[in-house]
Image (cartoon, rainbow, N blue to C red):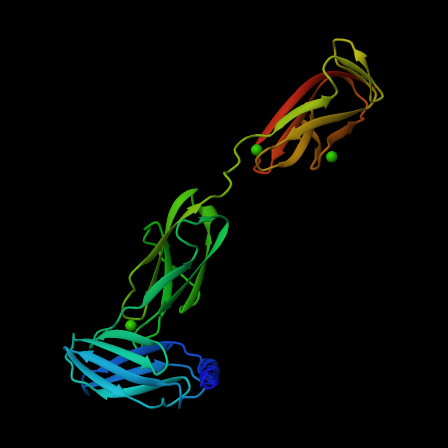
Length: 321
Ligand SMILES: [Ca+2]
Ligand SMILES: [Ca+2]
Ligand SMILES: [Ca+2]
């Protein structure tokens, strides 16, 4: 007696495991409705993907209109994917028509239309998420769909901060829009999306995001001339001693130290008496002044950052040979 019981339970478990694997169930994927008022006919197009429509199928379709319920039962479905049922249903323009389709194993799908009226499309923003911090270029992504059988989503548009300017997104059911956040100030901005089915716009979908791009660089770089040093004597590029006046005999390598904390250094220009003599685009910034000259001159080094902010430093020297 006990043995038989155990065997029966084991068999039951085995069968249930087998059944679950064999007929893995999922709710119907989609359903679209259309009501033809002249012919008083309701069209119900169902998407329910199955491997065997004889044991996995839409079993019941229930139509509710004007507090009346129509029940349609089936013992299979016509195809393994998408099929349409027609029902003669009496409705007036403006009536709500609710349709629910039940899978024979698990799940159902429900859709509603208003007889003779267009259902506006629906749009959703999937990325970025509400409150997310963004910078540079952001790919705004979303989905849209339309409940009416004959309608498709014609286009999806994006707008920012209630500007009233709408930008066309790429794609419809799955859409995206590349947004350059550098054209926007840092801080909170609102993204809006709407879909159009050729007749009506959807309700707006919207999210807030925080734009956070590096601030513009308006600070000039720092610069100082390291060589020659004020008040020193140089002979043939060598520092000899402090003598109170800057005197250079022979050639000299002018060296400048320049830094920029924001956008970075672009170049240092070297001038003699306000005449540009050399441009160094890479640190260390230096230039060998070897022209023979005699007299008082001004050496100037001018630093530029990548946003063309500049600053300079000068030194007056006496040069011989
Ligand atoms: Ca529509
Ligand atoms: Ca700077
Ligand atoms: Ca250099």
